[in-house]
Length: 179
Image (cartoon, rainbow, N blue to C red; front, side, top):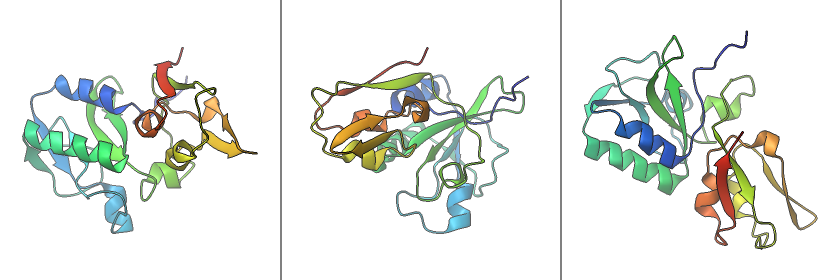
């Protein structure tokens, strides 16, 4: 039987839908950011919790308002962070969402860290793609590469975060259901 990982990837819109189901919020410092020191991409307190305790290893747990949660979501979009909801020990309910990046997140830096792919996957209209390289720069999962001046997509590496959709100047990338 396959062990269900604690984290999975979702888009920012999916993260907003998850958050909408909760009324109470706490935030704590990201353990990865604390271990590494200063993150080049975002602030320290980006681990959102829906319960007043989490198994996460960050510090400084504090209560938040919905307005403060909106600030984290705004920063997530501006700083190109990847929402990674995390499940409780039973893996049956979501306890919170980490907002991760490629600068300090253990998941991106340690290939042994396990995370489920999201329910969505990218689809790209290659005819409209101008090969600007922006999506390649922001694909933390290395699913998008420019080879011989052509965009090549490795969908096996697409985790469904949607960062490519948000940064594409040609609007030629969409997210669709994975299965």
